Image (cartoon, rainbow, N blue to C red; front, top):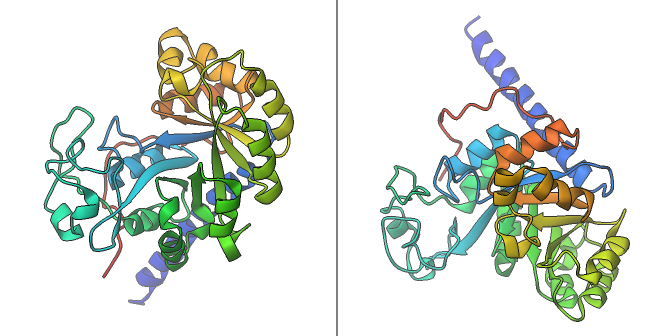
Length: 319
């Protein structure tokens, strides 16, 4: 009889794991089905409005909010640990100074992360392994600044059982990406980053599609009237999703988060979805975008009924 509570706990944990994994499967299915009418929501550096950017807490809050993808940045410490940090240095977002690449992981752990208002918090710089474990079965992760660490990331993803949850992006040439992927071609999702202002952009996209057949392209563009956009949509329609960043105007032809916030979502997100055929949007205002997509029935996954911001214990890696 004493074993019953333990057995019940194990069964409950397994049921949550299955439910979580089914959500990841749903997101992946939509990602790999371009043209299904859904729009994926990607949280830029996590929910940094309520927790420090690139922190475990920011990732956790984004998951609870109901995003489909959390974008984080990866750097490597002096002693070879992959951690989350956007800038080469830690001054902008922590209580310390110095470069990640010249600091040991132990030294970095003596510093605290700062909030978006530059206030010191109790949060620490997380390792990529910790984030993979915390996200397992729950959300996809777009790993930025990470392609140079491809072999290490794949090893960590295989160790944590999260290989199907990572999205790597790169602006490297199609040939270089294909070479780096090696045996993992088709197993790891890679999203080419393309600047519409490049003179050879259409030819480059053709080569990406021929060599990699990526399910999604990140498109950076400044001008709605760029004729390349019309041809780009025709090339990708039904084959690859278009990922657009709404973080600031020059990334998305002026249809940024701020425009959606101040003028209304139709002027920002709506234009990108209806005219530019965006199938994924990376945003700094995840809640606003989720609500808008929910109203238009364009969500890939159901929005949680409760979006609790209360932090409980977070899953972390073990020694």
